[in-house]
Length: 263
Image (tube, rainbow, N blue to C red; front, side, top):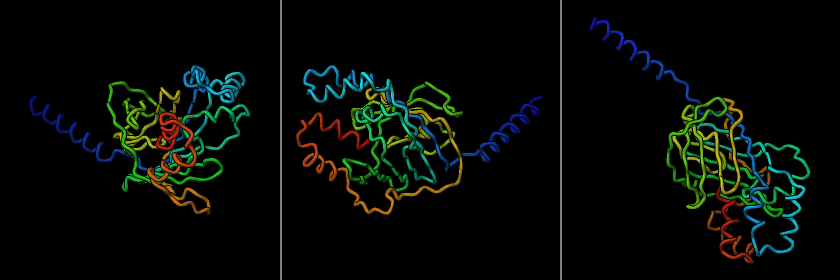
């Protein structure tokens, strides 16, 4: 009897080891996300209650509240390959009332972000005031705290982690170790698995994966099409914006605008 139990235990151990040895952990593919921005809640929280809101701003906000959508829905893709990722919007024909509402989105809607895990560097192309800005710097750290909450997203079992970015912005992420790359949308990453769900409560933004396609397609680091844009660091771009673009803003308002560049 003892020999039988030992034999079964040994065989079970061998099967587990064999399964682990041949388990498939993909390192390349494309993840499609749907991002929802509850524009009405965001405007009511950040604009309508401001006593010092200027007349022109109030007119624009009132127009979006009256005729704009309740929320904005956009689709995005995250391509990943051997430690490199490219995150960008999937261009679609959005309703006309989206245009004004997009101006209040607390992140850049049409930016492209390339990240390289091996070098810990990122490049982000931003369309800003009719020009293109290429930001290149080290990938920001996120302070994570794990929880015991779980959710299935796009067919993958995910665990929740709460994070803090830029020392002040609270985020909620759901990551899966079934895709063992420590990656995620935008500049959010650093968990032992891929982030398939992301929420920024203070910005009324939720982003969840709707599809995961595994493939073997390399990721390109070229963010511009034939046009040469000189990359600048966070320090250089922040100083440029502070002096020449947002010089009329107080420090609190400027930091709010600057957070768009680092999300």
